[in-house]
Image (cartoon, rainbow, N blue to C red; front, side, top):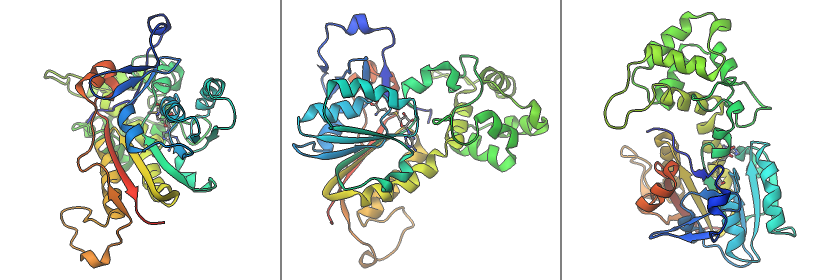
Length: 340
Ligand SMILES: C[S@@+](CC[C@H](N)C(=O)[O-])C[C@H]1O[C@@H](n2cnc3c(N)ncnc32)[C@H](O)[C@@H]1O
């Protein structure tokens, strides 16, 4: 599955949006458009599954452009939100929301969600909207896009860890296999991995266009109706590896569950089949269900700590994918904690 992005920033569209109401109803769900033209994915579904209520305390574990945070704050005048993002740049966008919702209803923490156990108190609802934001993608210098020349960075927090270029320079065969094959789901990964491994570390790609050109040179041209650039999957896999995205979500889910009040709700939107698999299995574990086909543990050995709110994963409506094409690979799952 190719990377999906959960939010759309209608760059330069302030004029177009100017006379529009904030909430623009569509046939199913509604596209909630923030002051900055930002649309959160599956907005209505999130609000209803989180059962946002007066006096509720919520955690938005992936603040991004603040689209979902705005949605929560708008839902009821007495709702409060703690918001996290590992990207320090997200903190700058908090200011817009603070102007719109004065007082102490919103608190932002620049930190990875794998550390959310450091927050105090419990929550009525916790939301994860995984992946990268349109803001990160659209800012060329961050190096997420293979369409614009920039240093190959791709870190959600550019002050932490190794850039994608540094990661590539140090990578061995197993690292490249994981990033390109497993995370990127690129069938022809071996060709690119071998080419990179044959290069001296200092000669490996250091910019977005250098890696994109190498992928184009080495990988076969995709064909078929949904042709994508040969670098698409490579960039996706590299980004997931550099940011340790799957490890982050694996660590964070049990911590988030522990932070829910009895009756609290946990909603996760994923964009990659591997992310969704982690969420699905972990949710089954909380609900005391077999985690996969071969899981034959007797029922009495399972703790039932939660109930499923989404028997089938929720996907965006056709209307939403038209308004926000980046929402098309979104998969939402939700549970309700039934224990204290
Ligand atoms: C898809 S965007 C969220 C968009 C947001 N829901 C909105 O409507 O504006 C995902 C955000 O999560 C952040 N993020 C991803 N992984 C994270 C992690 N492990 N810890 C904290 N933030 C993370 C990214 O930096 C990005 O800003």
